[in-house]
Structures are given as C-alpha cells and as structure tokens.
Image (cartoon, rainbow, N blue to C red; front, side, top):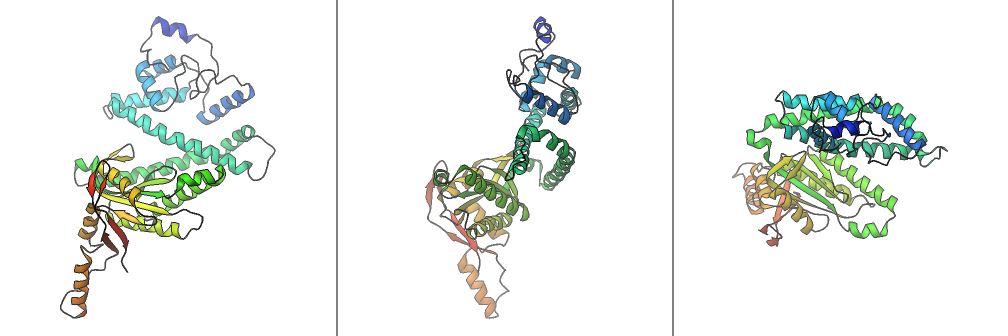
Length: 384
C-alpha cells in the first residue's frame, strides 16, 4: 500500500488497472517471479486465508470504508510491505480493515490505539508463525529424509495443522487475556495499570560471545533453545512473566519480590546442575516500571540490567529497594544480626518464635553504575 493515496484520485484509477502479478502481500514487488514456487505460495495463502485475491489496496480500502492513508498505516503496523496497486488482497484483508476502523468509529479505540493493536498483534504473530513453520518443517525433514523438499511438504502440513493450531492459538490468547485482565483489576489504582511497582530480573549466560566462536551453528541454536525453554518454564511455574528472550539473556517480571527471588535462585540452581549449560548470572531490581505493548521500561529495568552485568557467575544480585521489599513482606531479615538475636531470644524463651525466612541478603560494596550513579547491590541466597 502507498500512504500517498488517500482517496479516489486519477492516479488511483490509473494504477488500479496495472498488471496484477501474484505477489504475496508480505513480499516486495518482484518477489513473485519464480513459477512453481510462487504458485504453491498462492495455494498456501488461499488455504490459510480461505479466500482468493480480489482487491488492490485501493479497492480493499474503499470496500472497507476507510481512507487509503489509514489502510496503509494499519497494513504497515501489521508488518506488511507496501505493494503498490497489485491485486493481492482478499476478503479477509477487507474484513480486518473494517473491524479496526469500526472499533475507532464506535469510540472503543482511538486511532492511535488501533494502530498499536495492529502493530503488537503483527509483531507477536509474525515471530510465532516463523517459529512454527521452521520447527514443524525441521521436525519432518530431519533426521529422516522423506525425499520431498520443504516446499512440497509445506502444503499438506499446513492443511493438517491449520484448524488445530487456530483453535489452540485462540485458547492460549484467551487464557493470557484473562490473566492480564485479572492483574489490571487487582491494581491499586488506575495509575498502576501503566506505571506499576514490579520486580524485574535479567538472566544472562556468561561467556556467550566466546561460545558463538567455538560452537557450530546447530549446537549454538540448540543451546539457546534449551536455555530459553528452561527459563520460560521456571518463570511460568513460579508465578512470574517472561517478558522477552534475547538469545543469551531473558527478561522476566513478577508482582511479588519473593516470587522474583525464587525464580532467580531456581534459575541459578537449575543451570548449575546442567553440565551442558554455561554459568549464569541474574540481576533483579524492584520499583516503578512502565509497561507498554507487553514490554517493560524505566530506571528499574535499566538497574536490573546493570546488576546482571556486574554479578559474579552463578549468583543473584538485587538492588536496595528489592532487599527492603523482601524484608517488608517477611521473606528475608532486615539484618542477619536482628535475625540471630530473635532466634537466640526464642531459644532462651524470652521472645516470640522467629519468622521463617526463605532468603538471606548480604550487602556488597557500593559501586558506580553507568547512567545510574552509585548503587549498593545485595547478594541474594537461600537461608540455611
């Protein structure tokens, strides 16, 4: 689509009749010149979308009742390239434009928010689709050789998987939407829906750059996948949220400092017992975090990243605010001296039973951290 076309101008009418090459909407012009492979791509598109190509971008916008300018912005936000005025769009594309525009017209979403919905959905599903196709095809073609090319395998594979994956995707999305909605409802006030107090942690593989030079590409890919899988499972199992993966690093968050502490230590313990994995280091900070499109931003996130970079291998470093929050909720003593005194008093029968702390905190040397001034990191361990 072209953002220059905002109505039925002579240029639109002229270009509407241009050559109608079969180019997939996500591909740039010129990508549809490969004969058989392009025919398979068109058949796959018809199978997945359930509709034939009928519209140029101008015709699709007109049929949806939106301007070319808005249609172009929706299309780009979803991650698709401009295609000029090629007849490459379907009823599904028209319906998507009509739905987004309808939400704006009804006042349920602002135009800017509708663009964000398109962008976040496009970015998330693009990565998911790429991963699914690559993984499924790899599983079918390796280690056994079926004698068929990936191109020949793709159509029957998608035909079989499409209805099952579609239902599963909707199920998971509804589950995630229910969880996210619940977190909003539990927020203290409206401000917390955007700026919330969270524990944010990074887990980083030590010496990953050296590994990239030493390992074969396939081995490196398997290591990264195993690392991401382990982190994802542990974060989810203990009540945290995996924000994103960055190859040798993962970013997670938790509403509760005790949950984040458990996740950080579990990650270290799990990786330490896996001989195939490099050492790990974790940094966690607690404070106000801005959430946007599923990601987190702000000084707290930056501090967690800096703590990770200075953490010794196989350790968890936390900031002072995180240490104070663990003390406030009773998961760690404010000081080991106070904890020892309470335990001694309880043993002598002169005091209340001491709290059963899960974690211990040891203050480390204060040090300057780039962009954040001087910080006092604390070493987080399990209390024995």
